[in-house]
Length: 73
Image 1 (cartoon, rainbow, N blue to C red):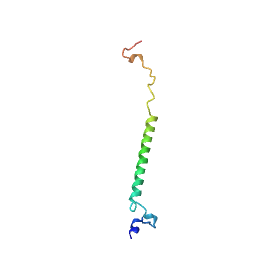
Image 2: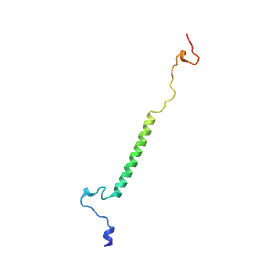
Image 3: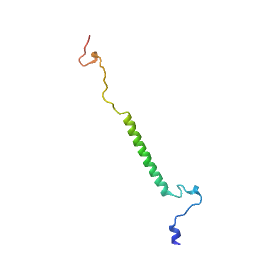
Image 4: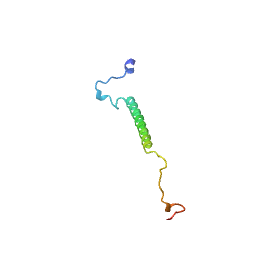
């Protein structure tokens, strides 16, 4: 009788193999799904920051009359 309790119960209907009957498999699936989503968000955010990164100081032509000591014609 004790061996029967140690054996896992095999369900005949595949529809019954869901959250209600297998919390362990479901929690592992949810954990790995959470890890995958987190990694995807981190990689996507890093890529977005890299593509919109600061490219350096642009060469801007400043008119002479707007300088600290203006130069008028």
